[in-house]
Image (cartoon, rainbow, N blue to C red; front, side, top):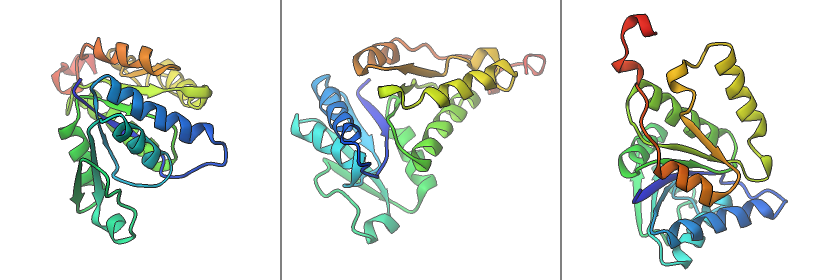
Length: 193
């Protein structure tokens, strides 16, 4: 994996461990020689992620909609900053620029990005690993909901392993590097659906 699209919040919660986590992930990716593709913002976890990676000499590619640039939220320190028309173009750029997806804690936008990466993997729009860093148990309820989707039959057996979740970055990156693509819906026979 040369680059990972990292999804995380632009908010800065009061608990400092979230900002520290994002900065450490940025440093950890840079130390492994993995470039960061992210939302291009300078605030919150996004800004900490970018600063961590840049501080270790890592590559940081920001992809940000023009509307957020106009609000002066863009990070001018990125190695590259791609300005796009909107959120759909942003997520498409993430998929084209990255070799996989890594989700850190965040809010609604982060969840949107995660679920789109999972959905596109199911459909066969990409065959890249989708990682979830469940630091401090942040995603415990989301993972329980994902298990509920599996148990009720809304996620097919072939797609049950799309989300790769770990509590530690090193373990998660190792599992993502060993990822083997599943059979997407577009390659299945009607009887398998």
